[in-house]
Image (cartoon, rainbow, N blue to C red; front, side, top):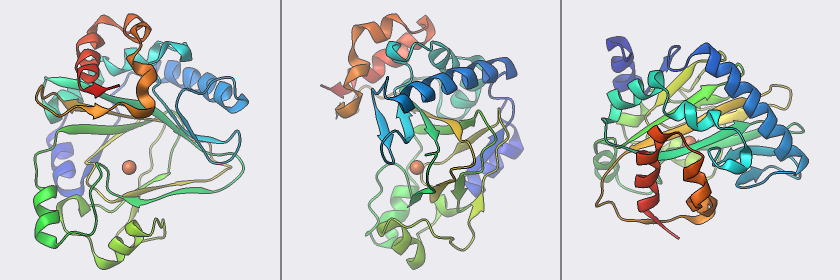
Length: 263
Ligand SMILES: [Fe+2]
């Protein structure tokens, strides 16, 4: 249930944390599934769409609803009622599947994802252009669900509503993850979800000794006239076997996603 306080935090600070967006039982099932997937990816047994930091050191495992992962709980989570209630409250009922991935930590090194805004914002625009972009209505609902306690995500609260500073611009354009004025680390306990505005300036800091097992996902508001996009590395999600393995409630969102992909 999206409370007034959460709504206000989201508008002002660009994010809010929910402790009731998934049931504890489902968190436990998701944690076990995520551990199995991570173990298989780390041994090299499984790689559909993984980003690595060095050999055998994944930090981003994507497309978790594919049958090759053998973990139907991921797709069940996407249509679980507590989650959908939060998603619908933010972007309406006409949804299109976005993505479902896992972020984890390389085990042998510190790995930082530099400061950025999501959604491909180009940073070299003047203030009026950037503000016009930031003020466009939101069409995506993004969130992270921690399956282990997680302190990797850092945000600059309020930056989703304003022009970037010169220092932020330099950090974003030079792919740096340094400490920036006003930055705040998001501490999530296992089972907590942070929903955030993709326009907020954010980073992630992974440490080898701190296990990160966090799902990152998105839904989009569906628009049939949206231009199609190159499916790229998600080609494996176009396979008929993917749909057959999904819960019926997810079919309409998956079909909409598929209709907007160019193979
Ligand atoms: Fe991001």
